[in-house]
Length: 209
Image 1 (tube, one colour):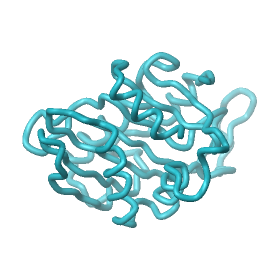
Image 2 (spheres, rainbow, N blue to C red):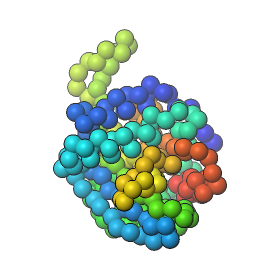
Image 3 (cartoon, helix red, strand yellow):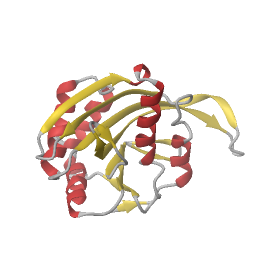
Image 4 (tube, rainbow, N blue to C red):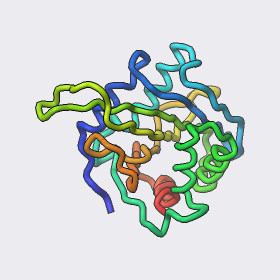
């Protein structure tokens, strides 16, 4: 079942996705060759990227929440039956809680995606980690000062490669956990599709159990 996403929530996130305002802490990812085989990985502090690398990667991350709300980007609730030990839901929470710093968890995630995404073209799997201190706002939407909540989340993007190890626009991805009414919505996930296809629906099923 799909749930409605408020476009303004997504705009609040994307307005911060610039080199000057971003609070991304880390980016990790892997590359897959045309035969579907693992072709290397990386895991770096986002702040250590060059200015050009930051800009390119922010455009990729931003494409997920900035996409057409409730059309390309849809919100789903994860069934309780899909949250047990060894589940993908548990894996995503562990990746988030460690800030992507555990390479073993990342490798497990890449393997699961690769198994569900047979593709004859090289692609990359990118994962971003962020902590957003949500500022308080009054009824007139004016900022009131210090934050009440820190929204910690992941953005994942599956991107075809347009050059050697150069990811293009995402074809599929997600925002986890969902961001609803300016707050963390821990039982939900927002999934992005550039275009619907059966191989992408298999990735949806991977996330939703």
